[in-house]
Image (cartoon, rainbow, N blue to C red; front, side, top):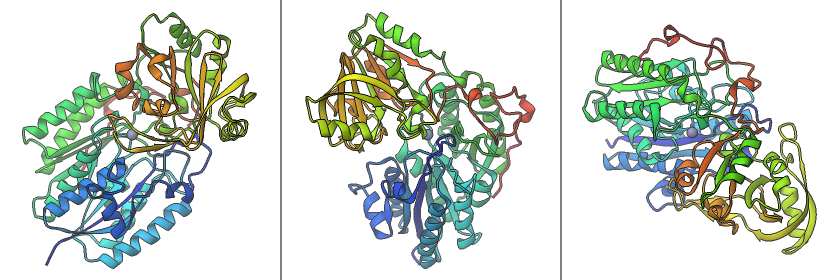
Length: 511
Ligand SMILES: [Zn+2]
């Protein structure tokens, strides 16, 4: 009988300090599809294949079909990073997806695309809940393979339910295809009688997402070490997770996963990589942080023909913040007549006002603090001219997700002296230079560019910038972790307290 795979996904990265709940309506915007439509959407050339999550599920589909499996589409839904998910969304997803799964039984494997750091109004471990619910439906012998973001919080509950989890090995995230492929290979190999053992270990440490990349430094060396062991045939797969640092849950942790032919080997390598990860804890906290005044001064002093990037990562929509802070503007206003700068603010009322005024219209604007007034205060900008109006749709230049569609909602460019202020409805994908370029703002012709992203922007912005300044700004994804209002994290936990090597858990194979 033809072997069967069930394919589904649930995606969202939660920022616990963003008070705005993530609703079913927000989940509709990034849905990969349901049933046969999901399969069509993630297949090469399909409507969702260019998106990150579509690429992951598409790679799973390709691998399963290559091996002659019949693939049955479940439900794939996702929302942009933001506040905790309403539990009703999770309940509805489980109800509809599990009904599809039950109808497809028996299946040999379930392949699931997850983010891995998702909190709901009722649960700190939504991905653990989803994997457990799937396990209860399929029983013990069906193989479950999942993909996760590098920023997942990989819990014991997840590892008890899933046979395998593979995480992104790049940050900025560029390896959606290969992550889906790796998860599928591990799971389908097991179905075909060549199963690996997967060891899991967590560390009581986290780091702000601006602090590291896999393109240089200690984290690159750690990834290179894992890749070399895979290439040498010593292990089958590995993942190094840096838990998303704005997740305020009771069981957080960075984690290492290693798949090998034997339990003994998987555990030994996981322990070794965990010691390396522990040794990196200080380095991962990142480069010097700049105050807003220092960054603005650096832009004034900059003599290169390229801009200074003010990294406003505390208000990064990609990290789950609303993107509605105008705090950077507050510091730029004294220089409005001399410093050409590009700034972005999520501000729907300002967009509506600009559309009402029309191009060339002039008015004073109160900007910022419209979504989450508890996180940042509005800033008054006098004598703004409406320079242009936009639909907000654009195409990403990448390198990540090149060619995929971005959408900031209706948007307007307000000009105040030399300041170009891009007001919009949703600041997602502002990591991509096309965010500004699509609105007629050329970043390389500015002396300062405000980028609300953690690290994802670096791939595109590093080559076109004079200096990148990780700047202390307000927001739900604050760069100074020790100043954030964590309530649930157990102590000791780094960087809130020093930790010692004996606090690393013992690696275990739970399946
Ligand atoms: Zn991530």
